[in-house]
Length: 327
Image 1: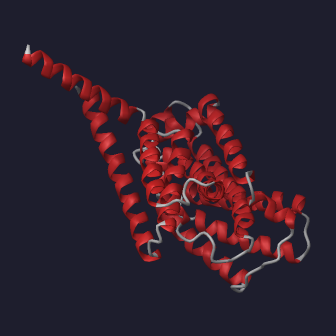
Image 2 (image 1 turned 180 degrees about the vertical axis):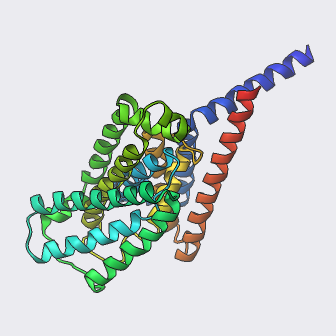
């Protein structure tokens, strides 16, 4: 009887662990609840309307960027240039503001330019046949340099209300929800989404199955660039100023959110919902550190630690699921 009971306990424990690993969204929700309760106990300002509005603005920018990063990582790549592209798009937006360009001209222009830089990354990855991390490491520095030279390091303030509105009130979170729903549908119900997963799972098999791998990779990076354009408008509206140094470290935040949400660096795994939940968790942690008045130096260290832990969690998931598959 004791042996039977022990086996049942092990079975239940294994079943719970298997569920948490197979459905990482559940794990993220648990962490979100735990982190929220902890910060709420430590700070009276946490559970307030104004604070949640501030959190939603921060989550929106990282969430939109993370969805683009998710696409690239699922296809077994990574895009380290997203923060630099955001900075360059901010610099261009500054010029448009100075020229009194209306928002209906500026917004499409920024989206198109973001898509162009994303496509350029995709073309370089495909044509050079070099790992995306190497290509985007190079373009990260190139785009950042262009942003600094183009803007001359100049900040732009006194932005028109039509520019600021994209980052105020509930607009940022509404944009994130729209983007998330759109890409969730794309990833689940379109051939493009299936092709992205197939390439990440086994690129050679995907090619033999007739999938146009190079074309799909270009589209993936183009989508990432397009989403950087969206995030740029939200970022500018949230901060109320245009700064060429914007976006520093944003690529790491996006990677952290995606991996925390269950996107695997092994490729072929991940969901939009998990990625958004990962961005929510990252946003809560960043907000909590601010409310608890943790030094900026320590905040960077803690953020880096979270990203490392997320990568370790991704490794653990892959090893565990590999053993379960062989059992």
